[in-house]
Amino acid sequence: MKKKPIYLYVLLGLATAGSLWGLVSKFSSSNDAVESLLKGMEEPVKSQYATYFSKSAELSGSLISNVFFYASLLLLIAAWFFVFKKDIFKANLIYITDILIGLIGTAYSYVAAKGIAASSFSDPTLLSSQMLGLNMSVGFSVVLSLIFLSIVVFKLIKQQKEAESVEVAEEE
Image 1 (tube, rainbow, N blue to C red):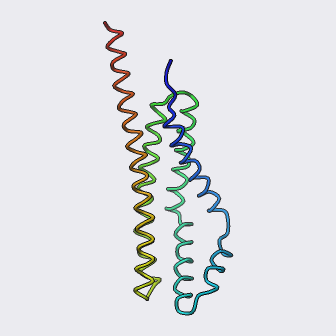
Image 2: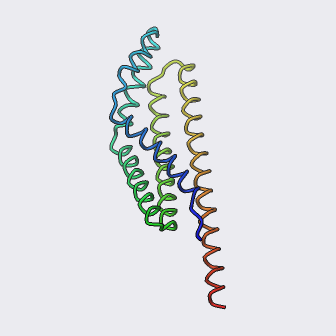
Image 3: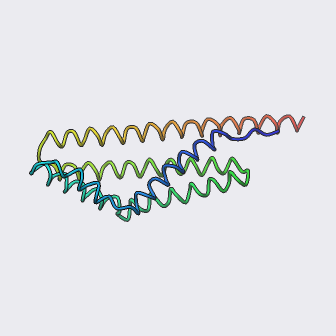
């Protein structure tokens, strides 16, 4: 009996939850949340944050960001398709591609968001706190992606070795 790829179910489930969260975020308006955040702030801090949030919303709705997001979403759907078809090898390869696309998208977003923060905040304290938050979130995302990638690559190599040993045993 062949083992079920529980690791892939878990990783794809987590990726699906993240993608659904991103999909909901793309179609929901966050103007009320931004307004409530800005309510208690004094000027010039308020205008700097308003500029930052506005430019960040533009970045998240940009063509390149959408290409990365929807390409990743389509790859995730394809990975689930191959899991259900019991072609775990293809599902693993597609998921690896999805992770790599996500890492490239994260790098693009990081570079763009860094520029947005630098142009939005004139107060060095605000800029440094925003950069710290950006660095922490990108660092967490990259580390998590690399952990997921290493799990899938490890399992893929292990499956290949098992397949080769079965093939050698059949030849004998």
